[in-house]
Length: 288
Image (cartoon, rainbow, N blue to C red; front, side, top):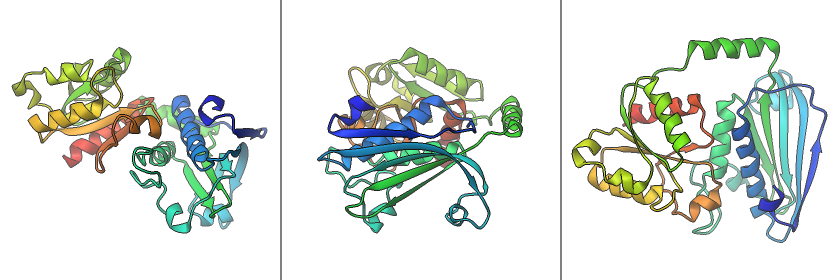
């Protein structure tokens, strides 16, 4: 985090002795922390302190956390707190909305905190934020603790396998061979048909009659050569009915430099998981 946050911000870790464990995707957990840290950095243009804390927490019925909509249970809490400019009540009410940003044009897509909220929701957790103008901001992520019984239930669910993806035809565009293969393998193993391309240029070289068979295009945002946004715009000109899902593991600001994503597009954060791929494909195909 130090390289990303900069030398003018002091990172203060206060990782308590956590006795519980959580079931989580390591890469997605790192993405949550990175996005929260970058958001805090942007709120401290003149420097400051970034506190990162962990702790166990038991939420009881009728308690303060339960009143805030958090189900009773045992959680591991990740808290990211800054000494920045803070937020108004109106801004605070919208921070998790996709594409909402208080940053100027070219400095944010509004996807960072929406991505964080999505990842936390996938893990059946909760995220809450408190802030006041001039008094910094505090984000608390509540990750459900995994008891032995929960681990067994998770294993049983995994054995049953995720739902099928409905038999649509998907074009997967990514310059990382491993990502292309992962997405295609997942979709083909769950009822979809796939085509793959290693670049935007290769995708646009697909014959028109083949392209019109595609129901959904899943593309990386940042690729060597043509980026995913430009390729998607060109595909829409040729095949307006095709749905688009953008994929990226980069933070807001990096995606922004490659073109702000329009409101209404679908976004899937990397690293990818089987459940996240299938859930997003099912969501988009059901609405197309």
